[in-house]
Image 1: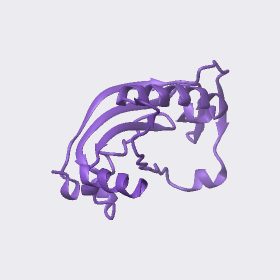
Image 2: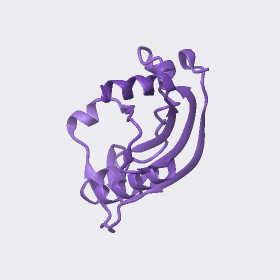
Image 3: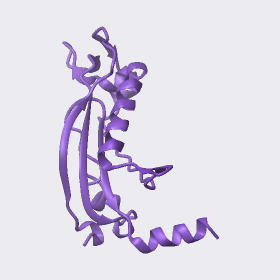
Length: 161
């Protein structure tokens, strides 16, 4: 399973994470360059090794909770990412800073990391490991992707030799 993008992603939870502090709603115009270029969504895929803190190993739920809390605090300073791009009265896109929040999706993929074809991300990553943004300025998908046990063993051997 997982070869050449043939895997499934099961969404377990969807929610919106807003800034922890309220903000006054206001509009920000886009730059002239943003108005000239067609709208473009950029997807970024990050992969991290599962971390343990002393004797405690973080669960998927605890990691998601920490990420949501940090994101809510960060959105206070980077409030534009909690807004949404809408058309103004002239029909031009503008950023409405309204603390709409960021779409936060929790999911589990039935694929091992080594089976993901990162040489062809459009077929393998887009829409599965990187969510399609439906609304708002930012969308985040947090998921578990399996790590093959031999890869983990090799890493452990290299770390302690």
